[in-house]
Image (cartoon, helix red, strand yellow):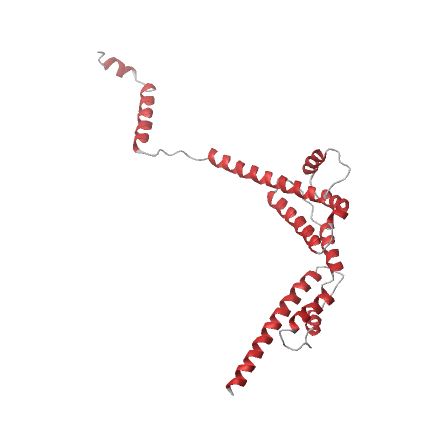
Length: 224
């Protein structure tokens, strides 16, 4: 009797592990697919896809492969990442470090995602560079064109490296500017009592030099 209970508990545990793994995979795939407005996926359809599988360890890989065949279509994922690049929010001011960082991270993430999907971004550099350059402010465009030295072809990896260097240089400049500003407005406090005494003696000496006497005081004062 105890053996049957152990067997049932083991089967329940395996079933729970398999369902959790499948659900997590489906959720991840659906999150990527639902980014495209042209696709409306009912998450329960994906669960029903593998609902008929027997609960064994050997069926886990088969369930994952079936889900990928039905939902993880690389062509749609590539369209999604390309659409994200084409519709990227323009960077208005290069000195807005936070916005610049978000812009760079977004572009870098989308390009690396395309590479992970097997797309050679070198083959579409002209399209990608044109789209990214349109979203940049004028001063960054001038800097990039100066570095290009009138090249007729723009490499998307070169553009990404330039944006990374430009961002890091602005971040360093902002940090140095903050440091200089903090030093400029720092109040000086003497570190020991002797400094206070020196400052007090100086103030007393200064007040003695500028001290004013009345005529009565000058007449009544004995001159040595």
